[in-house]
Image (tube, rainbow, N blue to C red; front, side):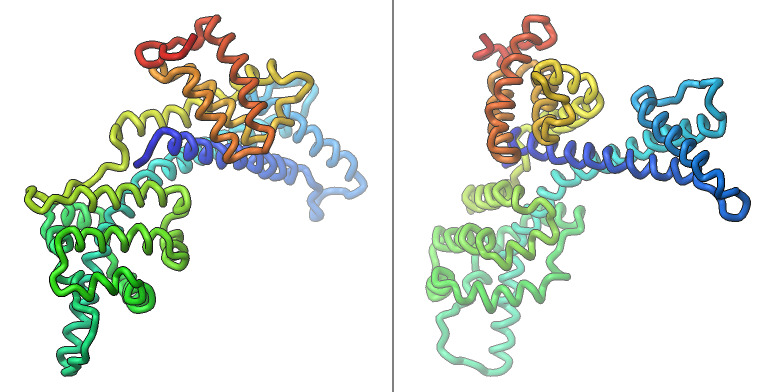
Length: 391
């Protein structure tokens, strides 16, 4: 299932995308600004090229110097045309940045929704296999092929598949989310012939005349655990519909396996559809606030970090490390029920996975010092569960 560490990682990736876009956007807007101060071959004298160059350089300098303030100060010594152009460029920059923030945030939430949709689609896969089996069986019967076979069409007869097709809530969600394998049915038939029918455990299952309920369940669990989530070509196919497949795969594997493991034939319904997260509303709020607050308070967070980075300009700290530090500080300040030690340990683990080899010590050192100072200053305040191990 989706847990807080995965949400932290996804928020970190979204912030990395935002901050890298921010830097490239500065360059794009600045170049566009400078382009306004090149001589026009139709009306300008190229003998004044130095004058145009000076105006370009002044515009670029004013843009850089006033970007943080979000507007340029009027200066009687500067041409109004340059001041107005710089002011427009700064407005354009922040308009584009706001648009980028909305796009990234929307993609973040869509990613979580996408996990749920892919979970439903994967659940439907055994049903589709049963359809393929029926097609193959009907085809052989019409052709009067009665050759002895070890394949007894047991997916078609599986009570787990039958109960899934009758599950009203499941069917409704497939319709509501427009989820279907119909466009990939040929691909499923290829997997069926080239992968599933050659798997020894599935062959043994299909060779049983009357499989028990546990054998039906074991076959479906094997299908997912040992084939769907392990086969390279299937994983490659699924990654095309999920850009974060490598990260989402363990979540989906857990959700799908748990759904079939918890199947109880005598219950009504026999399946319980799983949630992506146990505390979905609370977790999504955590996800959104961590992203937004880290982004909106980025400058103040940089200033906090810079004070603790001895003899270093903050810009020289690896972007991933800066994002990890800023997120950790945000979490310590904003989420009063999460113990400081939990936050620090979580982001140390993330730094080990996603940053440089020396990041662990660097992140740990900075966060330890800042956590102590901000707690003493009353900036970090914990309550309830957040007080555990905080001393």
